[in-house]
Every structure is written in structure tokens, then in C-alpha cells.
Length: 294
Image (cartoon, rainbow, N blue to C red; front, top):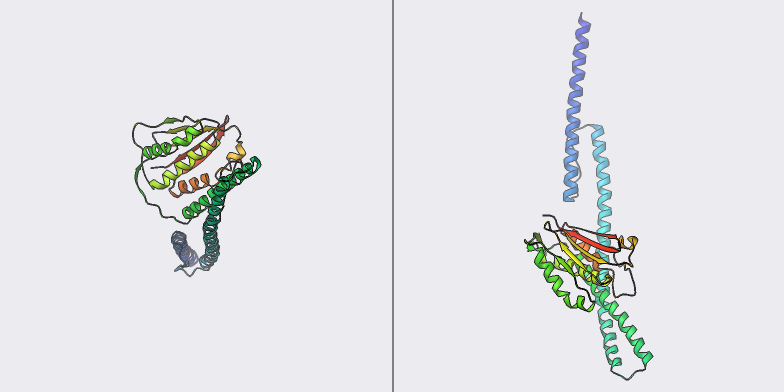
């Protein structure tokens, strides 16, 4: 008669042990999850620790700590390399300004002299290439400043007003290119909390890009929800080229005065302000759309 009772007691004890072990294991998993989330968010060097003496849980915590340590090393290496690259770009763009200014000065002097037709043509080619280099150094400098300055000044802005001002600033350029833009704006203001100067730079870069690659037209449309589209005919483009438009230094036509940084800078700024930017190409028309959520 005692055997069934002994078996019941043993089973009860085993069940209690399993329940306690599961409870401790659950607590250990919660501690690991909490510490892991904190380490990722705060990027601290504090390691994951658990109160349980469970061997499996401690091995798991140790393995995660090792992986976090490797992740921190990789991140630090990337940060150091990224910082050095930005500093190098800034220094190179700064150092190129002085000799380029001097070259432009000598070209100005040469153009005042009586020159043969061939020499004038050569000088014109040199000036064109020099202007491209000047623009490249300026874009490099602006890009390095943007990439190394994460802090933006946020304020309540009217996207409609900034877009209108940006279009007005390019009025002369569009007239020279014989472009009469079609503009559609909502009747009510579109308010967002963004950096005004960054938004103006984004609009300027996108308008400038549209003018450069347009076949003579430009359509700018802002929807009531704040979605903005810049559309122009560009029959020389291809879907492959459109997919690379936001890559640094990518240019569709190297013969044009372009650095390939304008759209990359726009993309960087849009993403810094948690917006989205995309390019599509259909029926010979390039459509670049940006959106800043509320």
C-alpha cells in the first residue's frame, strides 16, 4: 500500500522541481532579453548577466556576450573608417579649391588675349572641365558636412511654401532651358516638423536634377498628404540607370556638368528626417517621389 503513495510523492516532487526549473529558466530568458535589448539600444559595454545558476542559461548568456563584443568591435571599426573617410573628403575638397581658383584666374587672363580660333576652343574646353571640378569639390564638401552632422534643427514648416520658394529660385534656369513647369499644389498648407534648410536643399537638388536631364518638360505635384513628385521626360535614361541615380558619384552622362552627388545628398537628408525617396521610370518619364510622414 505504501508503494503507490511513495510513487505519488516522488512524482509530485519531480513535478515541483520541473515547475521551479522552468520558472527559473523563464526568468533567466527574460533577464537575457531585457539586458540584450538594453545593450542594443544604449550601445553600452555592460554585459548580459543572469541571477540563475542554470548551466544552459549561463552558456547562452556567455555566447550572446561574445557576439555582442564582436559586434561592438565591428561597429567601432566602421565608425573609425567612416570618420576618416569624411575627414579625407573634407580635406581633399578644401585643398582643391585654391588651385582651381588659380586656374580660373589664369583662364580669365588668357581669354582677354588675342587668340586663335583653335586656342579659344581649347580654353573653352579647359574652362568647362574646370567648372565641373569646382562643382565636384563644392558637392564633396557639402556632402561631408551633411554626412558628419547628424543633428538637424527641427521646426514646424509649410512644405508648400518651401517648394514654391525653391521653384522660384530656379525660374531663370528653367527659362534658359526653355522649360515651363506644370505645378500642382494643394489649397491648404502641408505642415511637417522638419529642418527647413535641409528640405530646401532636397527640393533644390531634385529640381536641378530634373532640369539637367529633362527633354524640355517638368511637372511638380504635391498631394494633400504631403507626397511630392518631380516628373520629367528623359528618354535617354534606362531602368538600370534609374536604379543607380541615388548612388554616390553616379552620373548618367559624364559629358554633362554633374557630380553625381546631388541626388545622393537628397537621399541622405530625406532619410535623416525619417522620410522616403524613390525613383521610377515608365514610358520615358522619370518620376522621383519623396514623402515625409506626420
